[in-house]
Image (tube, rainbow, N blue to C red; front, side, top):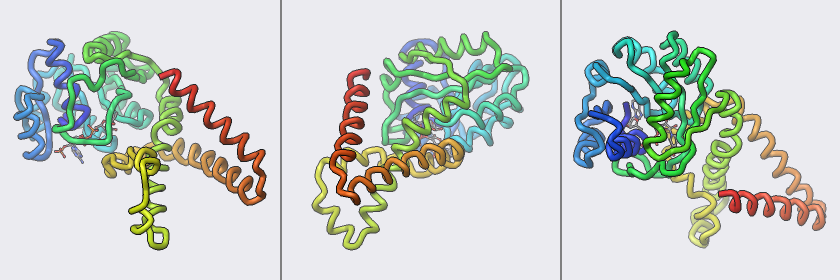
Length: 278
Ligand code: NAP
């Protein structure tokens, strides 16, 4: 369900790998369904959830995170007794809880592919999006081991490495390494624009601002939902970031070059380590 960047890419990858018989794209807008068909992402499309999931072996929810929570009970009403259900949402705790409630027999496997880009919609789909990417599964005590195994095999067939993680820890980690950077990029663009004569300042910006704010080109509605759904963790890491900014501001205010250099050296070393690892 959802034939955008992630759903469309997964459909392409699994059709390419030959791991699926027929892929039905369930979507709300006629325009997206038309693009998904024209690009050959799916075998057919429908806007009717019940008809779309009927007879399915696997349903993948690839819509914004609040929609995943809303749709899970509806999917449960229409799928057969052996159908597995998974999702790709960027926040896991509330989705896992909703999935376990909708599928008390443990057929829901919560997932999150660590792949993407700032473009969205079916036209941005790519068959190799998940090649070499981590795909995190966050099973609960209720989730059936066999369901995790089969969903994991499906993710691997799209080119991903499957990693298992506790859902609460997932949300804390991704608040730090993904949600905070997106929030900061949106805030930075907002700051530049709302500063006096912001438009004029922007005209002189070079690669630094563009590189730093690349992810502020992402879909605002999708990110609004992620920030709201992962509220506690996002607010916690945001408070840590505000403290880091305050430490830098204090060093600048005090003219404390030594403290400032220490912080910058430490940050640069952490970034070099990050690049080295990836
Ligand atoms: P996308 O390209 O915008 O696609 C979203 C899909 O969901 C589209 O098919 C869209 O249908 C449908 N949709 C949007 N709003 C909806 C609503 N209110 N009700 C029903 N359907 C709706 O987004 P995406 O990047 O594929 O993201 C999908 C999921 O993947 C999200 O949960 C996100 O957290 C997760 N994810 C994203 C990334 C990333 O980098 N983008 C990475 C990992 C995980 P229409 O086209 O008809 O509107």
